[in-house]
Length: 479
Ligand code: FAD
Ligand code: NAI
Image 1 (tube, rainbow, N blue to C red):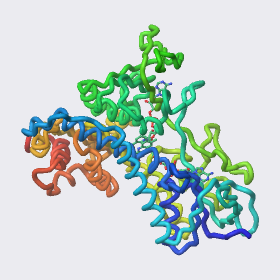
Image 2: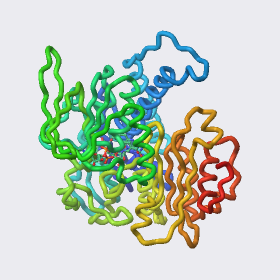
Image 3: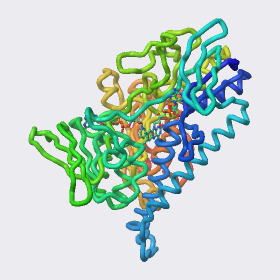
């Protein structure tokens, strides 16, 4: 016999599990299906984000940053460390424990909110008057019926053409988060978010990291001034980056008893080059995942790249079928997936959920961290709008000096006439936390003067935000 629900959510990543909880909060009966398995074969809800994305990467970034501080910066504070050593197995075990806490936390939240969780693969099996049938293939096979269905099946790493991930020599994000020992030479293809974060982890632990990037310039999506500052910092740290490369072959070769990977490429001048490394991370973007979903069984439309086609409100071509997160257009970010999940649950319940795509922040958790919200100076310029900018360097911020971390700056871009904030861009310590103030300000359509007139605690990094806002009107106080 099939079980019927108001809402069946397929996928328990940040999009799906948050949608399920919000729908349950609103009094709807909800099922959530997820197929992810932990090492013991049990359920591991949380999706890419919890299992092989946001959470484990931040765990490793923290461990490796602690190591780097102990190795290079503690001595500035008068702390002497003798016999410092890195136990990679312990670092990976800690990461696994952090992941498990999050998996267990989501299972607890499902119970608390009375979301029925089904462990297995969900696929469309047809539709009828009562709603859509979704078959769950897992330990127990069953069919659910959903009056509404939310597709939240996420994304998978994109491979280089003809180069499969083996997760030993050629690694996706999955393998890059589980390297059992520090590689001597780590190659990375793609100087995007994963390349920079994972490259930083293994560089801090002693790997010689080389990143090969197809585009001619660094971090094209970021504000150019911020990207320049970040590139300078990463280069100083020893991250080698080559731009404008065209990869022609990736070969696995025997080297004595071991194996190595050789990447053949043409450099930005067209000259043939090669890079030999012990492991290669391929981080060239992600592709939408609808494997096993059987969209054809109900006629769910996908676009030519495999994304589920949705409108601005996450409605698909089928009535009462919605799609959210990485499997639809827009940035592939956990908080974007969550916002869409909440909005869709609210729309199903008859409310007016809304996602403001203009105020979705981006954060890269390197050191210095990079964060931004809104438009870059280049985008505003290209739009023809008159604007003013204000910047403030962390080198002139007391808290940053006390921390010993003065790299970077805060930058505001504001409308020249109304002073409305159009974008805020940060490279520097705790940019991931500082950007929240800018998101709030932009959500309320604040002006740079609004920020400049708000009291910020002293000494704090947030004073750099206030000073950058003051700088829009050329009246910084501490510079
Ligand atoms: P996913 O998290 O991919 O979840 C989809 C779930 O659906 C999975 O559990 C999958 O098993 C399940 N599923 C798929 N098909 C089926 C099916 N047919 N039946 C049952 N279950 C199914 N974003 C940030 O905002 N901040 C970060 O710091 C960040 N760091 C990242 C680091 C890395 C290394 C990576 C790879 C990504 C990172 N991201 C980060 C991106 C973030 O992980 C994704 O944007 C986010 O997970 C998307 O959420 P989602 O719910 O759409 O899909
Ligand atoms: P990305 O889109 O951030 O970067 C991919 C990079 O690879 C780009 O610079 C691209 O020009 C380059 N590239 C593409 N093809 C190439 C080729 N053939 N040769 C060389 N370079 C090539 O993708 P990435 O790093 O794989 O991450 C995927 C997504 O996961 C991100 O876009 C982001 O949405 C999410 N993510 C978010 C994080 C965060 O919020 N902190 C952390 C990690 C991932």
